[in-house]
Length: 425
Image 1 (tube, rainbow, N blue to C red):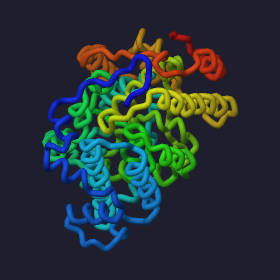
Image 2: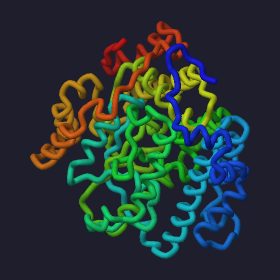
Image 3: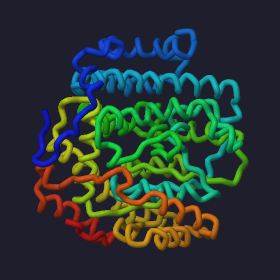
Image 4: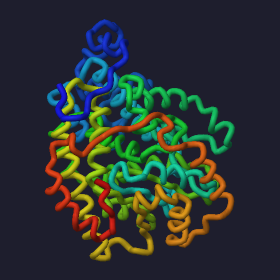
């Protein structure tokens, strides 16, 4: 059942419909198994060939509580289809496997804990404000490095720094299948957001290994977990984030700095800067009402890949509360001086769309860097190769969300005034 005046789910492929009817036996058999914490821990141990000694092999026990809350919400609230349960089990077990690998790798190479993640450039902003294209362009600068999808899905052992061996890593096709699976299960998702193992990826996937991540609330209707996440101390998630980056850069020559990206950092700027005190921020801005229409369309499509129940009105209300609160807090942090203006660059979506290279030059100049001819050439080639609408159009409307336009506009007025963000609707 879906709600919303204009949004309609895209048709699913026949094999997905067959699986959801119970006609595809291997998928059905996996989906019937409970999402039980101890069973999932044991399965991860079995897959990695690790003696099942309880949670100890997974490191500290901080992740057990959020994992238990998540699993309970998935069972009781998410209304997963057969295919949704099958994908979800694979997803959770893979993350538990990676935790096992991280703990074992750090024990074998304790020096990895001394790796320093220096001066990362973090792209953030509300979703659908240009964070993805900005991140992708910054990643083409040879002096920077963005974590690719496969690196965040399977970070252990560290990738080989040799470019040819890096590109031939056997983990790439495995990760590519996982990352593209939702786009195979439901049509239309690729036109909204592209996924792939060799593409720069949102670094919230590293935080998911601590089971404190919006990667779960994006895919699933899990209100009890969402409430838990909103109240949680995010320090463990950011410490896991740093652990993953330390592993990924192990053995690489010094000099390249990380360029990272996720809208979720808006929720936890204080924790982010506590873990990465020399981080620099590139924050993107767009009319919040356009943001809400676009992000809810994306979330609805992601949830449709896992469940027959998508409530667009509820998604609209949740997204409005989350992101309008974040944007108002961003004004407060900026006004108070908590965010050092010299370390933060702001970019409006409309300005970026009109002159992307000019905005990139302004970003480099503001942060005291030289764009340089080599980086400029790579960025221009990337823009030319990826025109807007490459994978089809994305249709969405704020009016589908059941929100009061005047109320939402009034809530966003302080943010739009402070950052001079124009109305688009």
